[in-house]
Image (cartoon, rainbow, N blue to C red; front, side, top):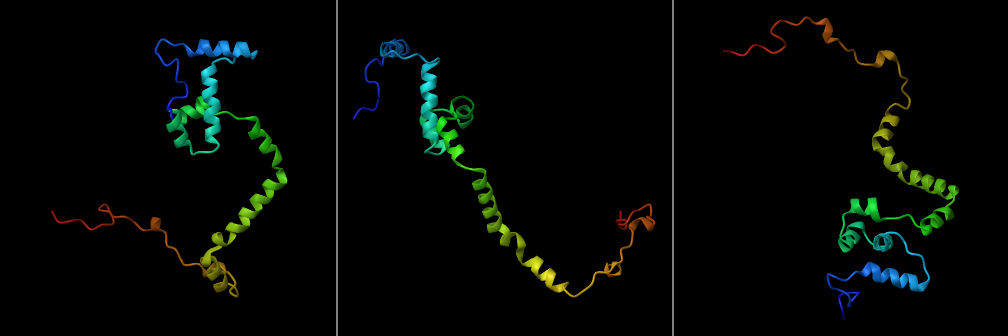
Length: 149
């Protein structure tokens, strides 16, 4: 029923870092540099694996850019998960995606064009005649007729 995790030692003159360091020393563990920063980074990394980044940043109190630059970490779990995925699996997934999107890329236009040209040979003379505009002389007034004054 309490909102705060640490209910004691909440005064402005309380030094939690010193107290936390003493607890670590008594436990026989080694102190991490930037202890609270490391705790914050670990928790933000854990939350980012389960919740959208904008939600995590709202809870932690920073922006996605700050989280990416200063807090989010690559963990051993990330490496373990990546090592379980073989190159064969990645190739199979890419092939499956390509096969799924092939009909979408084909379209009806290409089928209609192929059926129209199926029995018709292509000759250079079939193309429409193009006249060059460079051969036409241009008057000093240009193409447009002069507008009345």
